[in-house]
Amino acid sequence: MRSSCTKSMILFSAMAAIHLACQKSTPTGQLRFVSLAWQTPTIQATRAIVAEWNQLHPEAPVEYVQNNWSSIHDYLVTSFETGDVPDIFQYESTMIVDFASRGDLTDLAPLISDSMKQDILDGAWSSVRRPNGEISGVPFVLESLTVLYNQDLFEKAHLTPPAVEHPWSWDELRQAARALTIDTNQDGTNDQYGVAIGLRNAANIILNLTLGFGGSYFQKEAGREVVRLDEAERHLLSTLMAMMYEDHSMSPAGIGQSGPAMLPGFYNGNYAIMIGIGVWARQQIAENAPRGFRWGVLPTIKAVNQHQGFNAQTLSIPRASKHTRQAMAFIEFFANTAHMTRLALADAMLPARKSCIGAAEFQSEENGWKTVITLVDNLTQGPWLEVPGFAEWKTRVANPIFQELFSNRLTVDEAAAKIEDEGNRVLRRYQ
Image (cartoon, rainbow, N blue to C red; front, side, top):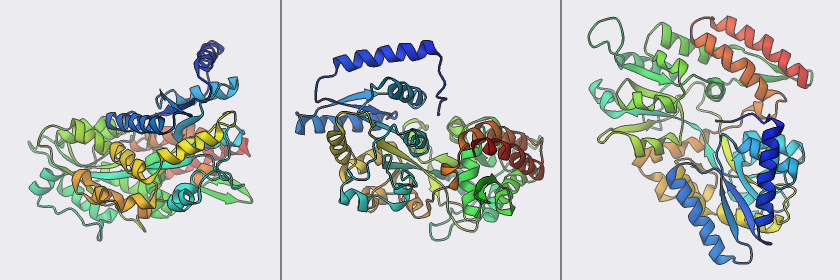
């Protein structure tokens, strides 16, 4: 979903021309807000909030500009290079780090109200706070991973889903997956698998789930960041490989697919449990699942704990904006408790404000909200966000090697050694 910031000079020139045209047509006092809302309910909610602001603040109207996740990075690079920037833009905590380190973003720390500082979750703030205390963006919804299940297949297997108070361990998940795996015609090929995980680009899922095993992949040694796969990091990999190649209870289709691409198979009953898909996918299921499809959300699978990573969607102000204080006022309005609740519900993501979490809407059984909202208690920040060279390590080292591993071309030990060797070579170039 994320794109490279490298573009040809032809593209740069074309985009620069577009920016200059926009700049000439923007009235004095008007703010430009670049939104990445993409699910229909979220676009509607975002536009409604902008319209409400414009009605209340005719002196500082906001122009809504629709962008998308695949092109936003290039758009921003061009904006910062030309100096023609939006006043507010939506992005995510993992990606604004580079822009902040280059000095492209306004430090929001002195501009944020005390009420907002105290109400947004500490973990969410940690994802946007730089080592020097600067804040690069305001987090408003949090994207994490969830576990979905097919209620009908559970009932046929006489399985009771675990309660939030008593989550399954990975061993218990493995046992349930075996019970849910069926070769109906005895031809040697399973027609129904217990579990599916989208492993096409596996690094994000593996890193975030490994936190629950106490692993982190990155350590500091002699003041330098290094990649290390110790027992905690290998435990998850070994478990997944055993489910796929010993138990044959995990669908091999996941090796070449992303989580969203596997949803049709979930609807068709090809697998009973989906692990590691973003919480936002629940909105897609609510919109697109066949009539009568019964599904739910399981508590996070427990290893040594239920910790897992998250990514915050953020609102930032470029340093080159000429309307910093008005832009911050809009952010405070856009991300207040009522609006954040509305946006989180529309996007099926977790709200970043403490005052939202207890709202009645998030205690409902509908779309698994009552279970999903408990994820907030276990969200933690992975150490990789501050690792120089992490993006290259993930793209050029981790994802390809995980593909080799899950395709059974490497053992866990071989994959671990390769990730350490090639990964540390990448990191050394950045340190």
